[in-house]
Length: 505
Image (cartoon, rainbow, N blue to C red; front, side, top):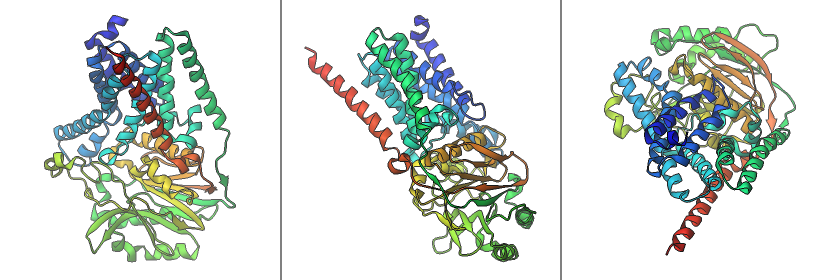
């Protein structure tokens, strides 16, 4: 076994495979223990492989992880961007390699900070560098924090840490337990093994205890909310000839008979597949009917800044006083071309409608609707919990509107719903997720998916949603506890390294 782990070729293959299986821990597969197994395999390899190959093994692990985890970018580019298959493969591969290169920094840091360290110290360094690279890819080059390992624990004991430390904190603790298990097996020191064992037991037990703490309080009155899933095919969504039919469909579904009158009706992202001002007169009869019944209508569409000629993906209140939220974090390849300085020559070969959008302000207030404050995120924005928290504690209900049609019948919509559930858990707020083709869902403040409209089905869903007040520790502190944790480990490991150098003759 040691010979297998220390051989550069077999170790490289094992690292690649360990990365490739990690996405199985996430939705839709939800094999949660893999979130512990996969990092443990990488850490085990790093204990035996020659140190000059640590970086290579780490890079191969990340390549395997992103190749299987976000391969669905291909569908956006090929099926809906009309790019030829070889070009779509090339752009997807560049995206995967770019992410892997960013995360491969972990190998460099680990190799330098863990030299001549005990297995226990190495486990702490491994945990710190993992947390660091997850945080790093959450903001560098605009950020892509998709598939942070903490998301895989939304329905386990570890989710009790979400209101405390957020998804990165959960990930740090998952990897800590994973690497300490390896240390428990390998460390020759009885004391170190005892420490590892105690931590491995204490972390999930503390999570279970934290789960009993309710960080927010219910409001006085529930909101009746109707979500509308139009299931408009992406191939016809932006067809001008289909615009009126699309608007009529959403109008008919909105006015469908209801048992209890809704307070709010929500349409998904870009349900209006053109500029708001172009359809105001057409939608006026519908708006008037809803206003007479004291029903609010909120929808996604496009907002154009006439003075600067900027176009925004936006979410607007159509009834009563107009309020508009402009999307600030745009989807790579769907709404803007990442690494444009490299890929600009390829952009002209990809035909995605409305794919050169402008970003709205980073911090925007919640929308004041039906006597409550709605914290809005559009599609990809709910991946950025650190930014969403600035709408809290004012926001009493979270609303995420999305159009995951871009990624076809892949794992992406399921992964996205898992991410939305984590936001609800972190902020202790109910979340209403309304999409074009699914998965639309009502999610509880504990991150539980209560009711859904399945993918690729047209329909409505009515449900009472109880607003919540108060703030979790994560709302107050954000990612700072995690950042401080890995920085302290870096400083500690670095100081040990310097002391060893000074001791040398």
